[in-house]
Image 1 (cartoon, rainbow over the protein chains, first blue to last red):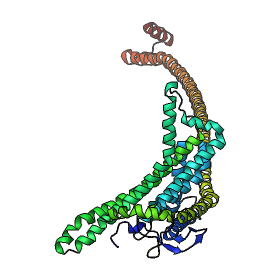
Image 2 (cartoon, each protein chain N blue to C red):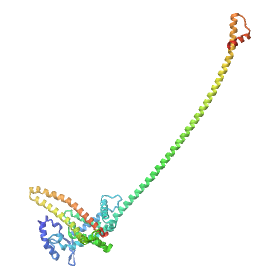
Image 3 (cartoon, one colour):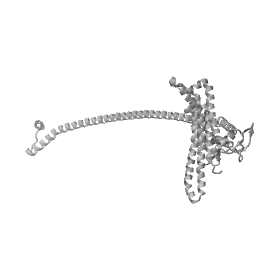
Image 4 (spheres, chains in turn orange, cyan):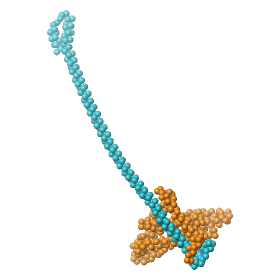
Length: 249
Length: 192
């Protein structure tokens, strides 16, 4: 079981809770959600507690992440988009810290479960739809009718736009989920090669050098992916929110 | 290999999961591909909602206002410092201008004083020169006068000496005194 690459994604109940026939147990996934949130919140809270006029290193990290997301949102959605700043920042920090936690050996990767990423994606799209209709009423539907398109093409273009809009939550969630899942499986498989080859004796140990090097390289790549996917998630969220704020292209 | 077998099991587990008949193995949920085990979804969704919701509220109410205020304070402080620097630069420029003006005035004043001193010195030198020249001229005139007086007295003495000499010469030559009037006439005639 130790070399089973799927084992790391298994969910086990820590505190069984059942309400109305549904299983709401506190699981290892729940524990790592709590850990993610507590670690991210504590980091942001404690590093800024001195409110230094000249920031220390850790305070700089918090400030840089703040300004990074703020400028991303402002560039994508304008100054009106800044009302969603806490939302986008929370999403980015949650996904980033969950991804990075997943890089620690024996830790559970919260974002490697499609239901979690899909829930976050639905939250984004739900926010876009609710805010879009609340702010613009049916004018929000102009989102599906790009300007400057010949009248003949409009039905086709509208159909394409609707399909692309509906596929957004799927692409947004599957991208993050698949990246985390595939990365962790690949890492586990290569690391498994190292142990199983080195069990074969001297020749096996020599042969294990290659998968070991791959494992090291993939670990670096996975750290990049962990950050990149959080970034991509946040950027796409900003762009979708821009549609809600400015529906006429 | 493991992946393949996991995927093979998945379809069966999926069906089982949907009817909630799957019972957990080894204290958790059963085999199959864990992300697709539907019976784990309620728990994941609930705890995601709780944790992410609290995280969002905590960031929105506590952390982000704090970081925002830190950045705001810093921006204000930098702007204030820049303003102060600009004001100080203006003051420095004004001080330099005042200094240069004062310097120019002082230079002008100094050159005026120098000019005055030069003029005064020149005038004094001129007066001194005039005074000395006047003194020299009067001395010259006096000397000329004395020379002419000496000359005329000398010239008047010449006749008497000539008469004396002539009388002596005649006495030595002929042993007789010549009368004074004829001697005088003879001397006068020879000097003509």
